[in-house]
Length: 55
Image 1 (cartoon, one colour):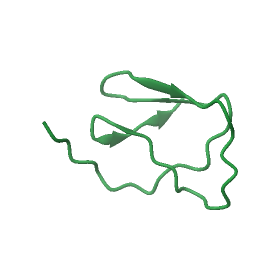
Image 2 (cartoon, one colour):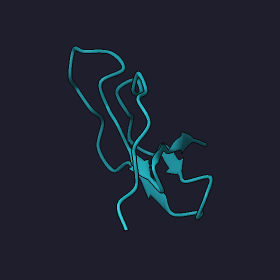
Image 3 (cartoon, helix red, strand yellow):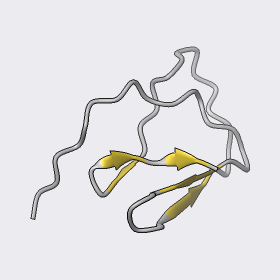
Image 4 (cartoon, one colour):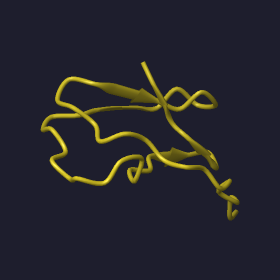
């Protein structure tokens, strides 16, 4: 079953220790290394067709 991902602007570069959670199913990611990219809001973590939320 394919899920449509909504358009979103993305997240600021993640930092070590931050946690991102899917509000639909509860799956979580914990960042283990900082993102050092110069771009802002370019990171996308999706689950269940939506952007995961930073906790």
